[in-house]
Amino acid sequence: MLRAHRFLLLAAAAATAGACAYAPETAAPSWTDAQLSEAPPSQTPQFIPEERLDRAELGAIQGHQRTLIERRDAVQDAAGDVPDVPTDTEDFAERARERARPPESR
Image (tube, rainbow, N blue to C red):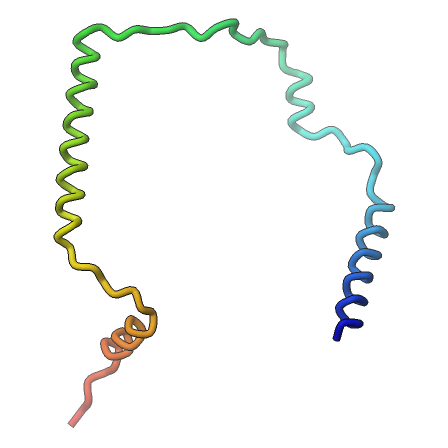
């Protein structure tokens, strides 16, 4: 068994080495290289401008934040009331088989 594994490993290594011998030394230019070479050069920004919010916008954002936090808390509280579903795979499969069983005809 060990010899078979060793043979397969050596065969895979030999196939990889053989494939590498036929690989081109330099890659052909890709579509993105062509697009970048045709595009005019652009300057990167020296800094990102800072935009300050006025008091009304800041207050509206903070109000939305409070609303979202309240809704999150309500959802988390409601999630505590939901009973846990058993996660045992065998039990789940057995119940699924029982639900899928056709009714017995008389």
